[in-house]
Image 1 (tube, rainbow, N blue to C red):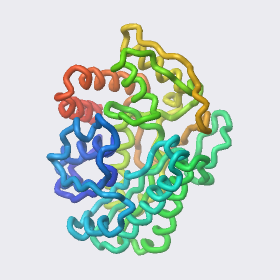
Image 2 (image 1 turned 120 degrees about the horizontal axis):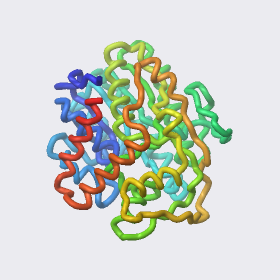
Image 3 (image 1 turned 135 degrees about the vertical axis):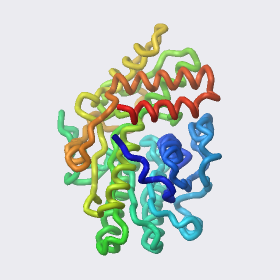
Image 4 (image 1 turned 90 degrees about the vertical axis):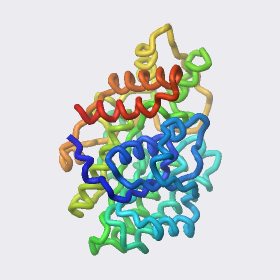
Amino acid sequence: MFDLSFYKNKTVLVTGHTGFKGAWLCKILTGAGAKVVGFSLNPPTTPNLFTLSGIEKEIVSIIGDIRDFETLKSVFDKYKPEIVLHLAAQPIVRDSYKEPRYTYDTNVMGTVNILECVRLSSCVKSFLNVTTDKVYFNDEKPSHAFDEDEPLDGYDPYSNSKSCSELVTHSYKKSFFLDGRCAISTARAGNVIGGGDFARDRIIPDCVRALEKGEQIVVRNPYSTRPYQHVLEPLFLYLTIAQKQYEDGAYAGYYNVGPDDCDCVNTGNLVSLFCNAWGNGLAWINKHDGGPHEAAFLKLNNAKIKKVFGWKPRWHIRETVQKIVDWTRVYLEMPEKIPQEMQKEIEEFLSI
């Protein structure tokens, strides 16, 4: 059982709070009684979970660019966060091919800026940088699951920028924080899915958009295997890492945050699960669009995080897809009920 009482009355800075994962994270933290300060660009899509959730009324929400060091530093000076969860990023692989410089600027220099603020602030006791499973050098060997000590060398600009973000974090940790005044970790998360993701070029949002339009779902890479997990799985692990290293710096490290092997499925199977759970004859078609390189196979070894924190997944792929379908029905029929649906899912997750 997760113990969220640790976060009561603690000031937590969440970068990227207007995004899909950020909105869910803020919802969990406000429910735990934390004082949440968010720093992010405006929500990246219309519609978006940040607005639907109504979370803005429950936190301090600051619209700003992670590349703007002076504004970011002023937030640290004013609110003095004890815990910093860094989620802000340019997160889309295809967009990184279109805007590589912006991607590196945001994902690398944004990480430098947030760590520099942590370095210059005595208030922060726990820092977590959320990266991605795509940070590893991936030669796409069948069935190979990456360990945390394997080489970092992402292929595309997004993945590579996140590899660089990891290395920046490693350098700052060794150069400035060996005195233990702030515990620092990174979390390399697998593919996160759940209700409220409206991003472009992501398969579950594509399914929801097809539903809204009454169209077949188009799948461009049905045989690509990914480690899929419900959004609440990594979020509660982020909070666990941040708490444990706050209490004992020995927990600080680099962690794969991914599902079990049974939840590493190809995209076609994932969409079939969605169609079957939705019913009403929903179907998908295979239509490759000739886009840029994306890895065909990717899997994480989650043994370390299981051993260190005693963690195991709560919702596997079928339950995860059913939760997404349930959330989507509420969104399409009663969008004003989204805050209650989010709270219901959080409580169901915690009750397991």
